[in-house]
Amino acid sequence: MKYWVCFAACLFGGLMGAPGCSPPAGAVSGGAPKQVPANPARGPTTPTAANSHPSMEKSVSATSNKSVDANVQVQTATFGAGCFWGVEAKFRKMPGVIDTAVGYCGGQKDKPTYKEVCTDGTGHAEVVQVKFDPKVISYQQLLDAFFTLHDPTQVNRQGPDYGTQYRTVVFAHSPEQKAEAEATIKRLDASGKYSKKIATQVAPEAPFWKAEEYHQRYLEKNGLDNCHL
Image (cartoon, rainbow, N blue to C red; front, top):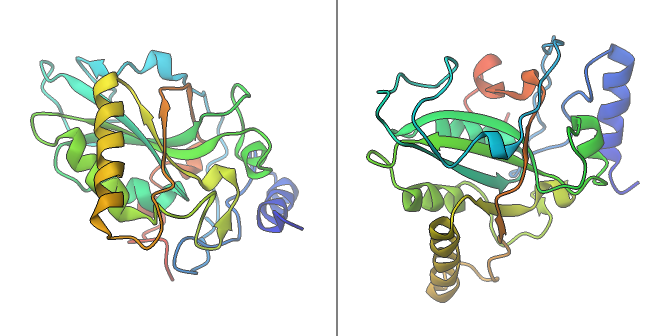
């Protein structure tokens, strides 16, 4: 079955009473199985649409990664680079990144669950939404990290994880972000760094639906440094 990994995980999650779908038993880029939490949080999740997260904000929530001066003009970036657990963890460690959240973006259904996204039928990509201080870290630096954190030449997959939910994609929150992302792709293609052309899509900002709570800061919650065993 094409998506047996996600279907098996969803079946297991349903039997265990987990919300939506338990994390898939598949693997992230590099071949290592995903770690499954022993007791994922089961509380309700309130999805948030992207239009309530403008790319420029004057403050962030109390759950932010770092304390922020109220005068800081916080900006937003959204990236899809395969399984969002490890990608979020890497971004959170970068100076200038204020907060992160993992979720689903670019699909046709409002408030999708992880179980639904796993079917590859909603059109959503697993993404990390990054809040950052542009005076400390630039959008270009985030782009450079994004292209380093995954294989941008793979189409609808990262390693053994496959399906459109794992596609490589940049959701641009402004014309400037769109231009920078497209210029970076053009530069990387011309550099000869990769044997294949960059497959990363550059899409306009779309509603962002926050993933179930047990996915947030997943590696941190489970005492892991990365997604590999």
